[in-house]
Image (tube, rainbow over all chains, first blue to last red; front, side, top):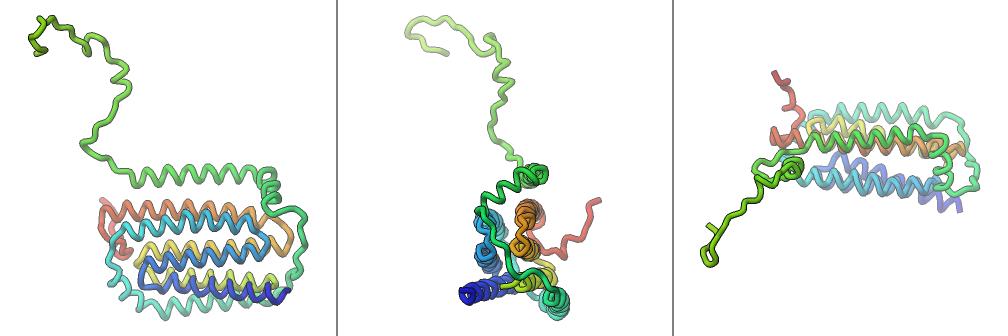
Length: 197
Length: 100
């Protein structure tokens, strides 16, 4: 039983790491975004392994459903020439690789040599219910602040990309409401059969 | 699987994200995606600790990291779009002049 769980962990961890590498070294930007989607998906599977299924579904909905789609929209919209951007990347490859390797070795040394808890305690409530019980009581203020942060991000994104279209017809409600009868209706006397000129 | 395996996976993702920022210095979209990878590595660490200590705080904090990451991606891409409309390029090396 644990062997199957170990195998599942190794499979998803390998997929995560390989698709993360695919994000950064892919020549095509659309391929990079799709590799990012694969990274998020395999991380969601790892979250399910860690008994955080609510977070796994939220990851899929928020990261894959919103953020990755947003990236894809922007990549499709900005028609850019990335062939010459690749040329400069070759110069920085050895240094970047060295820094990444040093960082990885340092962190792996720290994480592999500590003696942390290896047997997880079992919880009695479902994950969603437990998160709800904690989030809305103990972490209420950060929750409200996070919603405020999202509001600020929403307003900021709209303000940054809003463009004024000239020549469009708009309604001016106060002007319409302030209209009087004298300036909108005019009575003319006409004989029958004469027309309304 | 012990906690160390998840932490090392988080470390690998973090290193790949940093490597991606180093490698794609001129392409802003890949930089933003590498930042998302770094935040994802932090998320994996949080959830792994939350599981192996029986404490829900890690998962709660993952919520907020996810919120911040989504907001930052949206604002970053909005800045990118607004910039691209003016300059028709997203080469970071050409964003080097201050106005005035």
